[in-house]
Image 1 (cartoon, rainbow, N blue to C red):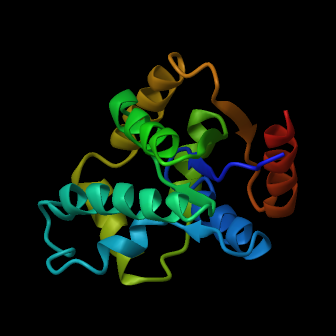
Image 2: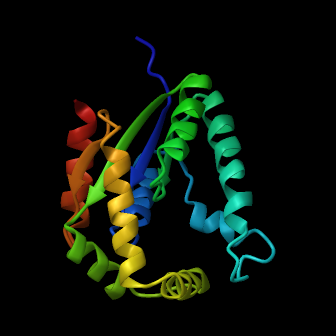
Length: 184
């Protein structure tokens, strides 16, 4: 039996643990590309600019990187909030077009806890500081609440998406829940 490469999309609100879990997933699945777009942003000149124009550059790069890695028969894990159905579908199409499968896991806590987790998240890099300032400029708590609602709207059309509850500090437990969800 041939095992197809997988593009595993870890979706969820900011600060829910996507990047932490993706790094752990890649570490435990050798050869898997951890396609963390937060890392890609910092490779683009002008990423600190307030207009956020690097998002328009990073998304096509991420699609191309995912395609290349899947074509090589290797898995991709992508920790990225995507609240627009069309954006999710682009990555799903890349997986299918390049001989892979698309699996979507959405990490969630309730809305107030999700917002609080972003607020409690420690800024360990310039990107974290930049991202926090961007969220504040865009409306802070109200902006994060709108993102949460947007994600739920997109999920209404994603019957194949698996929701995994993400508890504060429960990294191993959440990781195990992702593995269990992907067995089905």
